[in-house]
Image (cartoon, rainbow, N blue to C red; front, side, top):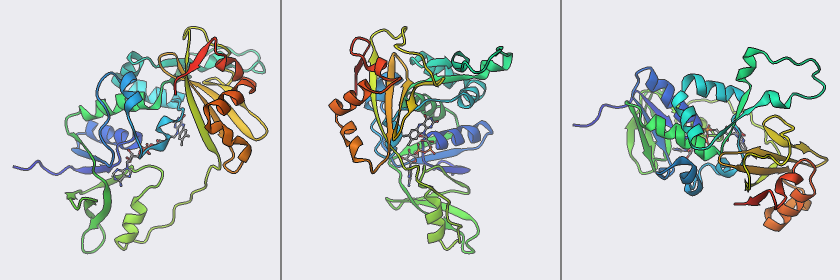
Length: 295
Ligand SMILES: Cc1cc2nc3c(=O)[nH]c(=O)nc-3n(C[C@H](O)[C@H](O)[C@H](O)COP(=O)(O)OP(=O)(O)OC[C@H]3O[C@@H](n4cnc5c(N)ncnc54)[C@H](O)[C@@H]3O)c2cc1C
């Protein structure tokens, strides 16, 4: 006997696809998530995050921080995931600790309890979400499944199935495109003869280069988080920012212009370290007495 078809097929199992699957399953719908990547490693999230290779999500290794709206949603809607990331070493950051000196007379309000960001490596958070969603009754997550096309009804009005690169046809009364920034469904619809308005996109025109460090003493920050959830600044032709992460880790991230040859040296460990040592607001973080690079 074959399992009944899912009510919704979600293409892509990143944050967007997983959150969609969770929200639909919570309302009692059967959901199948198809992702073209290999499954993540098992084991404690803070360790598995080191070995989770995600060529289909290149920003996976870049520094991320979950801002206060995301933290609030997590606490309210997915408290188990929030608890899991805290247990995995994530660190809540009270954003009111960085109220600028110009905000004279600041008095903390009860609603400021929501002004909390979460310092955690992206794969640690994503693994916690992935495992919570995968465990839900009614959710099936399939890996190595690359969706290549949609099959529509003869009138071209309703979707009937998705077709994978391996030629498998998967029945799908509803399809959610969570394939990431390329939003592949526009091409699939166009190929199926459905007129689609072009997406409005604009390159952000910077190149991000990150490196992870581990603090010798996670309880002592080398310098204040002058930007609330981060330390750093924006300079003439680049930005540098330290994002705290889980388990005494932090990411130092340079954002540079893609066509600036002066910043190519950041791609070497020595060049990256040299730039960090002379950059205000981040130099204190890379002093070898307080932190060592781990990536
Ligand atoms: C440098 C950088 C820094 C960032 N920092 C932050 C931050 O600090 N905080 C923050 O909140 N956000 C940050 N973001 C944004 C964040 O990374 C994205 O918003 C997030 O990854 C989007 O999630 P998604 O699920 O839509 O897409 P993705 O995470 O890209 O996931 C898409 C999934 O779809 C799968 N897929 C793709 N095509 C197919 C297909 N044909 N068939 C099946 N599966 C497919 C992929 O394998 C992947 O798993 C940052 C982004 C960048 C680039």
